[in-house]
Length: 453
Image (cartoon, rainbow, N blue to C red; front, top):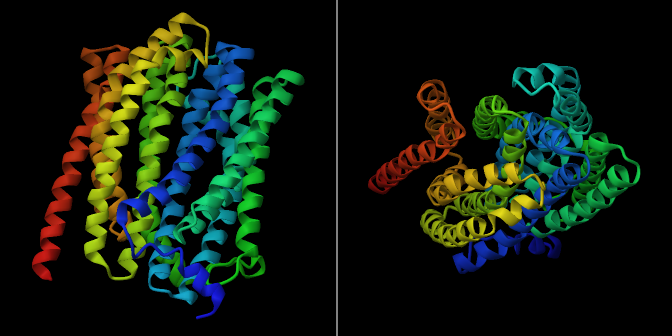
């Protein structure tokens, strides 16, 4: 094996102390999620503080839910590419890595262009469909159309980052996000405060930041040597690799889409309570994201960790790492819940000076935050199942336990409890049921494999 290939293989995580390797891989992903969330949150903070409550509701309300719908679907697709590449990487299959990498980029480019065109034209329908308050509609449409214009950059960055992480490289995606975060902050200040462009300025700043991240991650892959690299002229769909990626990615994509559709239904219910409540929910979404960036980092870490070890045939290490990751996630989540509750008023005051908005948002946080500990089970076990390529049944359990159950709750319980509390309670209830499904499925599946062996 050449020195270049040996350097690539040093990133493999099929040997060594599990908890140390998980932490080394986890922290760059979490920090990356932090900076990604930060450059999205900067839009909300600047718009909320310097443009107004209506603009805050536009950027963080209905438009944000549509953004989550589209990005969530493609994140699921990119997970398919990541899992396929981790399996090839663990097995040291150079041809498999090449085909999977170039197919993944073809998916990102084609998908980004198609959804960009569809999204620009469909934006008014999507915004009105969610019962968005009339005074918020114009800014919501404007923000969302600018977002769709840069869709290909979002797709390319997410796919490129997934490819790098699949090889064990979680540091470079972090560095690119840090650069993009500062680009977004500087441009937000320039466009919104300096030029007075309002919601358009915030959206355009984010678009440029996303383009920067896409260029940086692509440049890194093009310059790489060894068994993982990208050659732009050879980007195309490889049939076998495409089928493999879709088989794993589509269930995750549909799962994320169903999540987002459910959140759109919840957003529509929230919208009925007026602009202050919409603004509070928007701000809560940003505070809430502090937890999710950590949770998703653990989910991504265990997926890649399990994927490489599964590809190398180390099944015992797959299960041991799952429980180590679960314990780490519980510990950090418990600390985070305490911090969020203690500093809730300060956190909401970053987004708005409206005391009613702060009061409503803080109440939402107190109701939901303690139940983050339940979601740990879902995130880690779902990540483990993705890592071994078992995605269909977990996706069905998630769709039913969280999405369908939440819709049923909104339809029937809201008739008896027509309040913000009635909406918010749907979150912990659905998490508890889904966590039980995952635990039962994990132990049933593990025992079956053990008996077969």
